[in-house]
Image 1: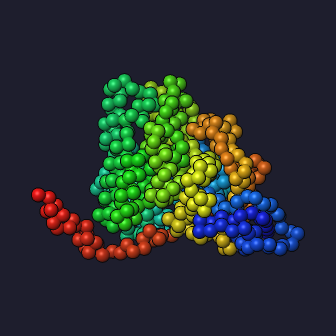
Image 2: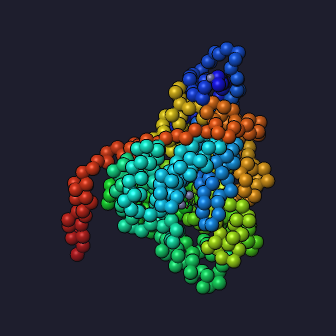
Length: 488
Ligand code: URP
Ligand code: ZN
Ligand code: ZN
Ligand code: ZN
C-alpha cells in the first residue's frame, strides 16, 4: 500500500540529540527528517506543534502467550501488542520457551503464536537444560532464525532452573556464537529452601512469596553470574534487576570495565511493598512476580542507577494472569503464577518517574526506552531512531497532557493492574507502527498480521574488544602477586 505521512512542527528527539524538524514517512520507512518539508496533497498530515516526536518504545522483556506454572499468560501476541501500542511501545522482544527441550520446536511454536501480531517483534530464547542437541540448536537459532540472545534461569528449581555447570557451558556457547547471555539471577536452591521455611511457619499467602526470596539471594546470583561471565570473558545481560543488592554488583563490575548490562523493569522502579500484602488474596496476589517487589528504597535506588548509567534500559517483564489464574495459589503462594503487567504502562511511568521528576533528560528517555535496546540487540539504526532510513515506528508525545492508569480501561486482557490509579504528566497521543497510525484520539486501529518478525544478527557492539585469546585473558584474571603482603 502507498501510505504517506508528514508529521509537522514537533521536536524530534533521538538519543544523541533533539531538533525541531518535520518527519516524512513513506511505505513504513522514514524518508526525511528536516525542517519545512513540502509535500503533495496525497499525504496525511499530523500536527506535532509543542510535542515530542520520538522513536516508539522497544520493550526488551515480555512474555506473551507463555505456558508457565500450569497455565498460559492471558495476553497473547495480539492483545499484548495492542496494549503496547496504546502505550507508545512499537516493538518488543519475547522469550521463546523450548518445547520438549527442543529450541527449534519452541521457535516454531512461537512463530505460530506470533502470526496475529500487530506490531514488530523479536525473540530471545530460554535455555532450560543442556546437552549436545541444545548446543547445536543454539547455532541454528543464531545463524538461521535471527535470535542473538539466550536467557538462563538461575531460579525456578525443578522446572526452568539450570546449575552453574550448565550456565558455564551456555556462557561459552553464547560467546562463540556472538550471542548475548541473559540471566534471571536468583539463587533457586536457596529460594526453594526459603519457600519451605515459609510453609513450615504457616505463611501460605502472597507475602510468603516475597519473604521466601529476599534481595540477598538476588545479589548472590547476580554476583555469581557476573563472575562466571568474567571467567568466560563474554558480555552479560541481567534481566529484571529488582534490588540494590543486584544493582551494586552490576555497578562494581561495570566500573572494572566488564561488559554487564542491567535491565530494571517498571514494576521494580515505581512500586514498593508497603501496603502490598492486602489480606484479600487477589488484591495481593496480583503483585506476585520474581524477583519480588522489594521494600521501599530499592525503587529509588534503581531509578538513581538508571539516571547515572549503572543500569541502561527499562523493560516490563509483562507476564499477566487474571484473577482466576492467580487464585491457583490461594492455599499456597508457591502455586500463584508469577508475573505482572507493564507493556502498556512503561512509556508513561518512565516519563513521569524519570523525566518529569527531573532525574533524566528527554534524550536519555529515548535512550533507555528505545535506542539502547536497539543497540544491544543489533537493531540500530533500523529501530530506536528517528532517522532517514529507519523504520517508521514513531510516537507523538504531549508533555503537557496527562495519563491515568485504570484496570477498567487498560487494553490488556487481564482484569487487574498493578499500577491501578496512578496518574502523571505526559501522554502518548499518537502511535505510528510500520508507517501506520495505530493509536490516535484514544482509539486503537490495529491489524492482526501486520507485525513483522525482526531478525537480530549476532555480535552487537558489546562484543567489540572481546577476542578469543582465552589463555591470555585468563592469565589477566590472576590476582596481582603481593596484594596482601603489605599487611603487617
Ligand atoms: O515473575 C516473573 N518474572 N514471571 C515471568 C518469568 C520470568 O522470570 O521472567
Ligand atoms: Zn505503497
Ligand atoms: Zn525471569
Ligand atoms: Zn521475564
